[in-house]
Image 1 (spheres, rainbow, N blue to C red):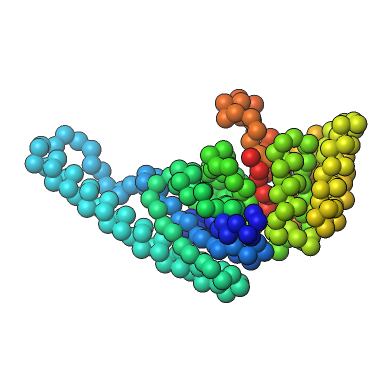
Image 2 (tube, one colour):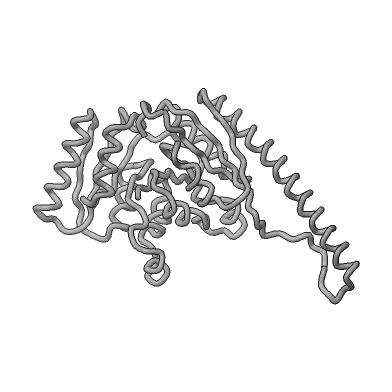
Length: 289
């Protein structure tokens, strides 16, 4: 996320009201990093809607051809309408980002699956911004959109997942476990202008040990060398509850943590710590892989 790389911030948006929050956080990040911003809207190849008409029953060959032609025309009309509505929606978000002070703002619309499309695009991307809720969560009342885990597992870039109304981050916390992913996260924060000038709290959970203290000292020194004020804590207890409690007590408004370190199969049977943490920490969360 270093501005010298000129890698863009990519905001993934759908036509839910949560996209305005994504746009605001993405615009903030692009301004902080000094990078161009791009809005990406992916139109699903298989929208979960139908025409509402009953096409069942036995029909003759001529009627079958006529029906196929009719369905093809309906599909084409729906696709064209979705494209046009998406274009209007993207232009509105582009104007919102420009009004917020973001200079280089582009829009892109694609047909397909979000994770696949992002995997194709990620080469020129430094940061991805994604809503933890979207159209599917809006309709089903689920608090974690169905795309979050799929996208995070498919990509190798930091992903900022956001929730509600934009509030400019003032206090950042790294959930640090001493592993390679969160060590890279500390180095990324130290090198990037994204959080420059903000206090960055370091939090480890679990039992106190010589190794944990050594790891925490390394992280503190790395951030301090880059000019950060970086208070550190090692608190015994379960990571999920310790992080959620510390977020509240310290008024943290952005969390950085490693994500989905276990296989999808293990998550299926035992659940995912990342998803649990995303549910308990209702603030924007930067996920690292």
